[in-house]
Amino acid sequence: VIVSITRPELDLKISKDSEEKEISERPKWDNKVQYLLTCIGFAVGLGNVWRFPYLCQTYGGGAFLIPYLIALVLEGLPLLHMELAIGQRLRLGSVGVWNSISPYMGGLGVASMMVSFLVGMFYNMILAWILWYFFHSFQNPLPWRDCPVNLNHTAYISECEKSSSVNYFWYRETLNITPNIQTSGSLEWWLVLCLASAWCFVYIGFVRGIESIGKAIYATVTFPYLVLTIFLIRALTLPGATDGLVYLFTPNVSLFVAFFKIKIS
Image (cartoon, rainbow, N blue to C red):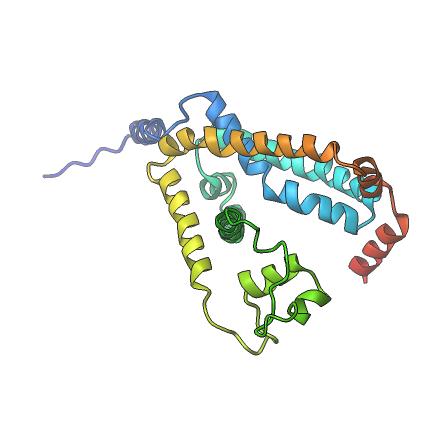
């Protein structure tokens, strides 16, 4: 005779104990500095240094900062603090956090994960281009300093003369772009090698999870900002730096209004 005795309070205690054990076994940062540097590295990247000045100049200069700051205060910062607070409280990833809040909101976690994955794919290609230019920067003279000569060695290539040596090196030497979109072209094996090298660096940083990320983050976050600080100081000392800053941040209301008209229409 098999007697089954159900004790809901005991089952609940066992489930809580197993859940606490699972949470306690999750990897942790060695210290708060690693966590802080990781958050800074994720929030401040190429998009801030590279795309923000471009977007600011394209869409009205200082006028672009108005909607940017409004979106930052009303949407960006609250969402950031909410995800950090819930993640630390529940000790779960993005998918698990939103599933815990509501099963109907699990798609937000999946979407967040996919966005991070796609952004990582996009920026890793940029790292491949950086490696390509880094290897070529050891040549003297630099390959993008002057236009290449034609086959007869009598003049520069006309296509380069009509544009610039920098653009020619980018489109013809780096990308080897095709004349039209119907022609796909072939693989640029040197770029493939640079991309594979970039993914190898990512693998080395993530091979042991948080333990290896925490060690690598000291170099991958602090060194780039040190270099950017040096570039900033150098740029501010160049002739015309003040004029460039004034041009960048001077509000252009007409461009700002035209931008919103396009978006609304």
